[in-house]
Length: 339
Ligand code: NAD
Ligand code: LMR
Image (tube, rainbow, N blue to C red):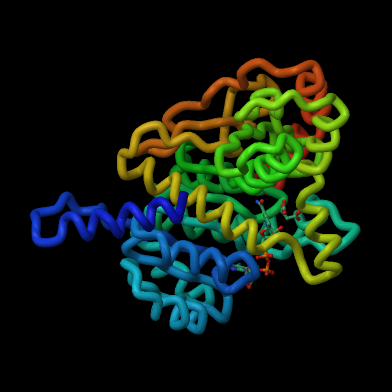
């Protein structure tokens, strides 16, 4: 869909040349952690997005080089690199969308929750700066453990008096990307046509793909569905293991992050029916104040949290199985932020 956006922008600029045009709104996107494994390819993909007019690349170090590099690409946005905390305010000022892939990634043998001790503090300080410099931005949280970092950001914003639950998103798009890819492989359908909702959270069993709702439909055996579910839940670990100590998914995550940010920009710009799965404040499941499901994104962020639809017995069981882990990850984040 990024390619589609690029192509349609190109055809718009061709067909409209010489005529009064309806301008594409100015939009500033900030990436925090832009010099990292995800940050660099994500900076590239956001530089290719014609909906972006200003691209702000922030990291503790290394961003001037990344910014100089991508700034030479002949696409719409003006790129600036900001390095070090002194420049964080400038990086954030006026941002419409802030994407956060800052923090340490897993090594083999670790869970995402093992990243909590380091990443919780990073997210807390970045969220504090967001509440000060761009409290109305849509925040796309990538830093793990997402199940806890989103509640941390919510608490920080609440304390600052800037919390708007419609503007905070945990990015679970990579789970959807994986579910689509793995499903297409087994169902023998064109991958570009595949849709699969993924609900719950973003770690192990909390990731719940709803293959019973996948389209195009295919009559897959129960054991195939079971294996597809397990592979989607373990997709992150599959990459961590293959990278053997050199980190976790970066390229597929950059792709997924770019898709999600593009959806946010389209929503802000008033494009109708922008629907993506995301981990947001939710009342779909009583005991889980944050939950991933399909959401409709519009001018104010989350316009509507869509229902879960009907679940198979296997998925109903999966939903029961994820509740306790997700609940404790949420509580851990809230507790940390309120200290
Ligand atoms: P990385 O180590 O390659 O890059 C992280 C970057 O964050 C580094 O450049 C580092 O300097 C920067 N950073 C650290 N502290 C910062 C701060 N206070 N402010 C700004 N930047 C800071 O790691 P990566 O592979 O890019 O992964 C980043 C995070 O994304 C990890 O927590 C990882 O687990 C997570 N992740 C999430 C998903 C998802 O689906 N949501 C997918 C993949 C990775
Ligand atoms: C992923 O799903 O790839 C990320 O959450 C990174 C990880 O640690 O698995």
